[in-house]
Structures are given as C-alpha cells and as structure tokens.
Amino acid sequence: MPQLRKDPFGPTWVIFSPERGLETSDFESAQINTEVSILAPGNEYFFDGEIFADRPVNSQINDPNWNIRVIENPDSLLEDTNPQISKKQMFQIASNSGFQEIIIEHPKQEMTLENMPTDHLVKVLKVYRDRIEKLSSHSWVRHIQLTRNVGKEAGSLYNHPHAQVLAVSVRNRWLSEEMRAAKEYYKENNSCIFCDVIASEITAKERLISVNDDFVAIAPFAAKTPFETWILPKQHNSSFADIQSNTLKNLADILKDIIRAINDSLNNPPYNLMLHTLPIGNENRYHWHIELLPRLTKKAGFDWSSGFYINPTPPEDAARFLKEALALQGVGY
Image (tube, rainbow, N blue to C red):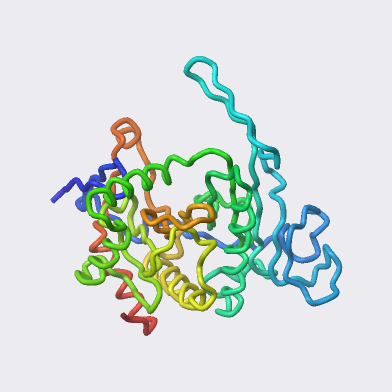
C-alpha cells in the first residue's frame, strides 16, 4: 500500500508507491565511452592548473606519469577572494568566492571506482580528505562538498573516473536542513540523530545492507529515490577531514562492495555519490556520511509542485535486493 514517510533528517515527506514498480529493463546503464578521455595522461596541457599529483619522486609538473591528479576545474565559476556580502532591502548578494577542483582518480579511464585496486582507492580517499582539509582551512568557507557523477544521465562531463570538490562562502540548503534537524534532535535527546539511527538500523537489520568494523551501509528510512544508499562511519565525526587513516581500507571495501551490488542489481545505472560533511572542526550534533543515488526515476510535475518525492521502491525491498547481490559476491555481515 502507498505510504508517506517523514525524513528524520529534514522537512521532506516521501511518498512510497510500490504499485508503480520498477523493472530492470527500465534502467539506463552508464556506458563507458571508448573515446580517449581528455583527463587521461598525455593531455595535461589542456589543464595547466595542476594543484597536486601523485607521481614518482623528482617528476616534473605536468609529467604524464601520475597515479592521481588534482586540477582546478576549468569551468569554475568561483574565485579565491575574500567574500563580500551585501543586502538591499530583502535581497542579498554574495561575491563568487570559493574553489572548484577536479580529482582525477586514476590514469586509466576504464578503471571505475569499484574496480580500482583497494590500495589505490585508499590513496584516492586520502586525497579526498587532504583537499577537504586544505580548502576548509580558509576561515570564510562555510560549505564544502565532494561529488562523483557517473554516467551522462547523472551529469558527468568526463568519461573518466573523477570527483569534484566545491568550497564556498555560503551555506548549502541540504546540509542546513540536516543540521537543523540534528540540532533539534540533540536538544531533545542529548545525542546525535545519525548515531542513534545507526544503532537502530544495526539492531533491526531491516534496512541494513552491509557493516564492517568502522562503517555501515543502510537504505534510509525515507529514501527519496529508489535504491538510495547511505554509508556512515560508526564513530561520530562531523568532518571527513578528520577521518583516521587506519579506517580508510574499510571505507574503500564497503564502497566497492555497495557499488558492485548496485551495478549487479540495476544493470550498471548512472549514479551520483555525494559526501555530506562539515568543514574542519568537530560538531557533536552532525555526522558526515556518503549518499549514493542511482538515477532511476525522474521528477515530474506532481513532484515539483507538491514538494514530495515519489519513490516506487521501499527501502526495505532495496536493502533486500542489495544484500542478495552482496551475498553472491561472498560479502555478508
């Protein structure tokens, strides 16, 4: 039966409508483009704004012999300037202060995240952490995020494994809503809502997909899209910049497992991976996490006008499908 569920992390209500159904044949795959990638080694002259590269010792900048490379986003709309905010009557304007970077995660364009050697992915995660820490050190940065878009339908501009980092001087709507809900919950319960949800889901197991010593993967109670999956650290922390190095392998493992399960269950769909984090500085009411959103449905007029999300796949069903896919990989919890 259709059911409305309130998102515990924000003001949104989600309508679950299982009778709509989803068939695997409805899904579009994120096909690998066989054209040579502009981000591949040998094309460094296209992007001369190199910020960091993992290369052999004594290599020169723009040397094509690299393992991971960080560059300025050539389409950046932001500038490294102190923010200026002005207000006229009810309207506010802010200068375009901020940073946009691209992390090229592997020299080979066909080396998707879930197929990278684990030790290489651990290095990629360290670069994520280091860039977030570096950009967060600017006192005026109020919001920082990392996203991965896989497939054209998910907004990917490059046929190459990469992530984008954004740091700006203004708040983000989604993080602000999560933070507001987390503050209200903490005021009433004197505990972190994310930590309490993790404990509840591990106990109930109904929406638990996978768990290891340091991380848990769940189908959120009010998932806004089919097969939405969250990966959260068991240990409370509000900023990804503070993640401990000895936990990165477990994060790499659960990331690879979950993406493989999504690919196996849904025929390699386009997806967005979004890291929700605060800048540097621990906050006892917020908890960083990764959100994985396969792009399986599109919002229609009803969705936009009502403000509701319509999800044809209850998270309990999604968790069951993904656990079955993990079991076929030999992964359990």
